[in-house]
Length: 308
Image (cartoon, rainbow, N blue to C red):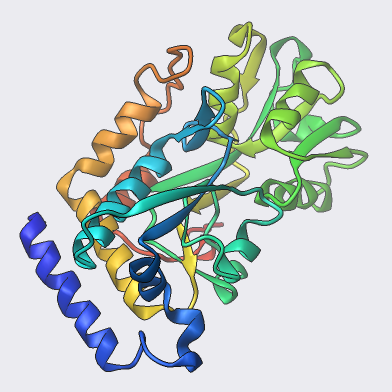
């Protein structure tokens, strides 16, 4: 989509929203994100410090990654649509435990980490169209000989608190992988450290997070990422629920990225080429589901992807 045509469509959507009263009156306080952004000249991006190549920090306080760059494109479109000469970006570090609450209470306008869009979360927040379809997988030490999730019985297995990986770990136990000792890490870095130090036998997380952590480890060859995908997860940018004007603008911005090919270029930059801070390559070409998401952008939840 050409940028001029995008601007016309967005301005039309914003005008319609204003007609409906989205920007006016205290009754709409929870759905006035664009008004708040325009009045303050500031937008807040929720970011992660160690979510693989999607959202991470370099040099201590600079946030970057695939989803961070996507959000930067969205911010530029918001600035253009609101006709702001300047739009300051505030970065708010979020965790799996607080990210939804910070979007709900208005602290974060765009959450640009690695959040799975599922039906339960859609009751509390809204999601942009998905640009990356993930698979929850298992990382082990190669020397362990573990080749499948079934071999995790009676093993110590880590997952990050508040992540959907915890649900998959418990699902494995219900399905007969018995005797597992569940170890909850506060974040992804701690989860991998537990594996690295031998305190657990496996770490369950998003595949790209595991692949990135392995690529950054001292000896990547010591680790194996199991082929088995425990669940298919559409990873998407979170925004406040019930904000029709913001939702329209964000959706159109993401759809433009998908259909113009820019999303594919950004993906290649972060997942198939050397990235900071040390120039390692994650080595995860876009899978078929991700490519399908670019061809037909949507905000459908995880449950719509599940197959038996």
